[in-house]
Image 1 (cartoon, one colour):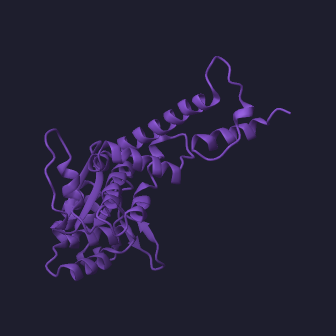
Image 2 (image 1 turned 60 degrees about the vertical axis):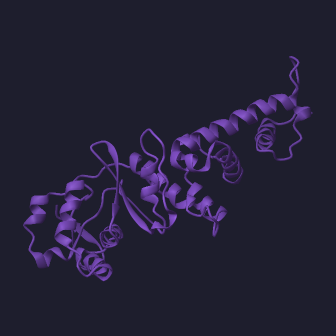
Image 3 (image 1 turned 45 degrees about the horizontal axis):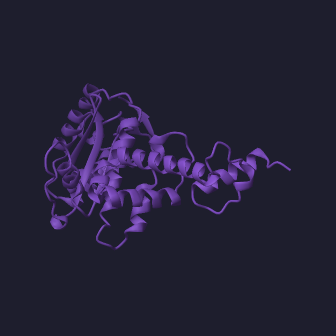
Length: 267
């Protein structure tokens, strides 16, 4: 009896990923090409397309690995996380966490944070933009009242904290020419990723400013976020930090607290 189509498809996909699957008898080998050779063609195309999509999403990681090792890593990752979406832009989403487990405690542990930074750029590029706040209305709020405000960040803002110099590593791989070496022992870096005027932007932030933005993104009031930043750096200048936020265009609105943990938009 002929094999059901859904069963044939299941076995076909399983064979592409190297899983045992009795499919030889369900496919006729006409035209001089064996079933094994036909499957090898599909399997090769599957892995090559996946690896190329991954390389486009993670060019710095690919450069750090080198072509041969990256091909092996892509194959291992695909085996662990086969794509379930027709959108190739999403195939690399689980990679940072996969690398975190794959290289935990080893000399390549920093790969996970480099990948997290690159995926943050991917997410930021595709995120929708929210309306910008009315900065004049914000400027009219008294200093005391301002501390109770919540300042949501644009949906495309991403914040990456690493114990390695991930921004320096990423920057070293931008542009033509020889890639300069980076001292992995140079220390931690915190990176802001956002989109401005249609282009991706990255900036390495001091710890206190990073903590401020992290708190604002988490829904803290400006006063609460300021306290967290001050705990990191007692000399932190909140006025200058907010000015930089406005210049970058990373604020999405202004909300007044209404006493139940929620907020009411005011600008």
